[in-house]
Amino acid sequence: MSLQSAADLIRSASVIAVLTGAGVSKESGVPTFRDAMDGIWSQYDPLELATPDAFRRNPQRVWDWYQFRRGLVRVARPNPGHYALAELARRYPLYLVTQNVDDLHEQAGSIGVIHLHGNIAQTKCSAHCQGDPTLVETYDEAASPPPCPHCGAWLRPNVVWFHEALPAEALSAAAQACQKADVMLVVGTSGLVMPAAQLPVLAKRHGARLIEVNPDESAITPLCDIKLDGPSGRILPQLIEALDAHD
Ligand code: OAD
Image 1 (spheres, rainbow, N blue to C red):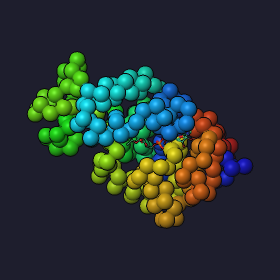
Image 2 (image 1 turned 90 degrees about the horizontal axis):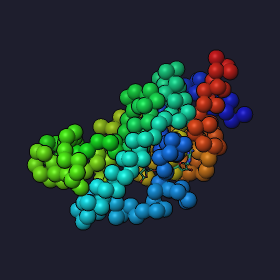
Image 3 (image 1 turned 180 degrees about the vertical axis):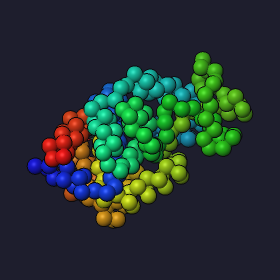
């Protein structure tokens, strides 16, 4: 029933916005942050690994930990949820905004993905010596961390850490998408991290109906018009089937 209602809402939309979080990549083997059993922050302290201060205090520990996470992302492949979102964008005007630092949406065929929290595969100068981001492709792979080939400052992953601002262009594009959307799909996010968690609120304030896909409750659930309970790798393909059933 709710799948059909969600399909009806989507069919009636002129513009769709989608916000994804770590949950959409979980079935690809990339761990979430806050799942109680296996979430990254249940095993590691973000203040020791994902802040500018942590990097200043111990650049090697932070670099090595991100190298470990890069390894997890490098072998991951898109799951049916990523493919279903790419398919949805082929059928409807759709803005895809993600908090994820992997590129699994792109691998599944999505284009123009708005990355709010950066890209873990990219490396940048921590001193922003040629502007922010100063992306660097060639560096000493054996160093931990390697120095910037332009200025000698430490290199770091191109991700947003706690206490850092989001890339302004991405945030502005995401906010515009939410203001235009009649329907917003919120997939696999706890809705606990600002300012991303504010985007569904913004969309709702501008008249969008919200559909959430998540096996659990999130901070966004109370705002949602439709809640689709379950893993996105199963629910999103079912949503495409529900759209097909009527088309
Ligand atoms: P969280 O780990 O906070 O939340 C993951 C959400 O995914 C939870 O609500 C789960 O219930 C849900 N979930 C789990 N399995 C799922 C599945 N198979 N399908 C769909 N949903 C599932 O991750 P985010 O909300 O993305 O920030 O976290 C937001 C930000 O906090 C991250 O981008 C990261 C982190 O600190 C930075 O790195 C800056």
